[in-house]
Image (cartoon, rainbow, N blue to C red; front, side):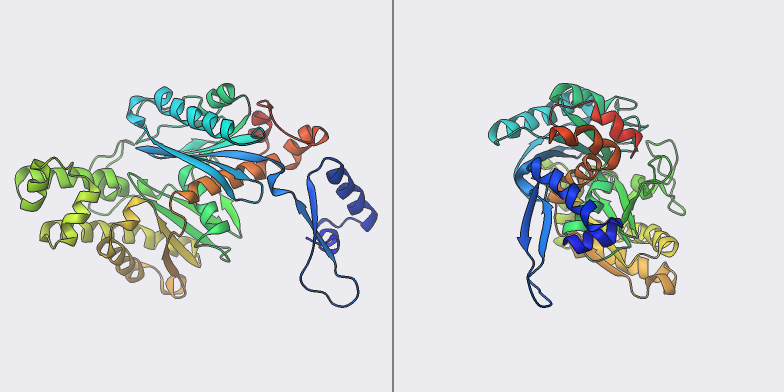
Length: 396
């Protein structure tokens, strides 16, 4: 921003703005450049934080794998690593892999990381840095994820839900750019969403906003690990579709699935999609029904929130036209006309990078929030400050 723009946003005087920018310059955090447009006379100078002054580690965790990225302060990924994990083995093993990847990246990049952000597939209590009764993370309930990683890495750590991180990543850098009101829906092993309203991520009072996977599907009775029955995730999530595929292979209703299973292919959601693309009628009907159920629930979300854009991400969103077209058809048929009239339904643009960029963005926002910034700004860096974690959580 130019100094004039900073004065307008902050309502500070020119001397006050110059004084604060001088402090940032002394700490080597500031860079200046000419702006392209000029209204006459000397071209104004734009000021900003130096992108490579520091970097954060961003951990995007899924049910079967994790990606860790080193991201600079402008949102550019410097480097990243991925590895398989098994969340069903409990938090210690999976988080141990995350810590190992973070340490590998830190060792290969000049300078020390400022902090780490981790996005997990479960309901997150932001203030305590834990997941609460996560349906697809057995054995993780109440485990102190944030504090455990902060102790291992000796830096500030922030924890949030994976769909929230992906929503922010797509909003800032991907399919949602330019849309102040959008909903990101992650269709993966489970189903969740992140809500952006007025350009701001909405977490709700306790951090549970956007958990669409546990909204009920009319007429469905499948038991859900959350304790209810008929949840969307329990009938149309990736794990649920994998169970359907296994049943179709076992009882022979889908000869092609059975043949693939006998050849060693695990009948999961991706195999179900491959079989459907080859014209298997039972697999086609399974995906069509799942899309109809997902679209029906999302129609209620659209009618309630009236976003300008709905972004579909996660592994299932890439399962071909059958599922996505069924989602669109059901959504537009059931949503209120005023809410769906100008609605754009798009697929996510960033893939797994969306979770990494979103987690990094949220971490940088925390580090530069007033309550946290005042604790480290005089030192010029928040490195090796795990105590900032609790300040971050308290003032989020």
